[in-house]
Image 1 (cartoon, rainbow, N blue to C red):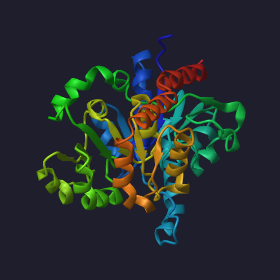
Image 2: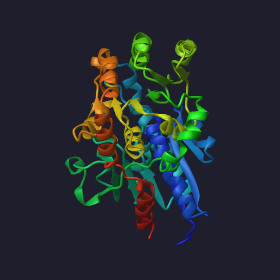
Image 3: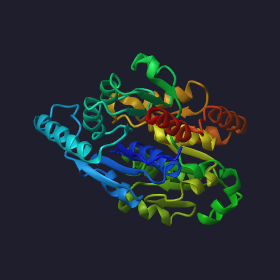
Length: 363
């Protein structure tokens, strides 16, 4: 079915909302090369830069989230919401989408709300085990809801749910073959275990501070460390690259090679990261960010650690990091069982399945 259609996608704020939308767009573009694609994002957020870099047009709405604390910024929220609804309406009227896809983030609320008012078929992709308020509101009107976790009928109409998993980079599906290339790429010693520590694209302050404090203790385990500091913190921490066996990197382009090089991973617990790590199938220590809505990273991590598929270390207990690393490095059997258990949770065909659901709506 090679039909030409107009596909509108909205999602952003973080990589966790942007990359799923891009993955879905890429899959649909391959199936429908003559179709038109348009993204809607939030002005000033990372999607406004990333989406055009990846070859798609994007329009911005002047929308922010509600602050959870009492804040003067909340006073401007109703005005921003009204102007965003009006602009979303103009974008939809002009673009005439056949289907609208939302992957979460500030801009997807007004965009899907207006699409639903105009009776345009729509689908949302919920990455987390605990959905945000926007998707809970939108769920009543959309046609389909693609999810990555069980038990979401607590929040969404059960008849609309399809468990697909989260879209992931296709280059992660065969990282076993890339081990040697990865060791060369990062100039690693093949006789040492490699510890990879990731704080997300912007970085994680608490993880960076803990590494600064404990890096010498961690290195006593005869490991080498790739420390992804994030954009916000790179200037502050790059000096630690001068220590033998430590590489501080701002942002990693070749995630496939990073995962291929790793023996143990330490990561935040964003939904996208978890989906990737299930496919990668290496031992993982999750340190969820406590600074996200409804503490959803802890809930995401627990859905994995409750199945003995990873280790959970709360940020409030981050002083235990050297001890947790040492215990895991010293227990080969635990490393094997964590790898086997997390791999069982992988859903590698998520992008294809979501695209199938979009096509069903288009029919």
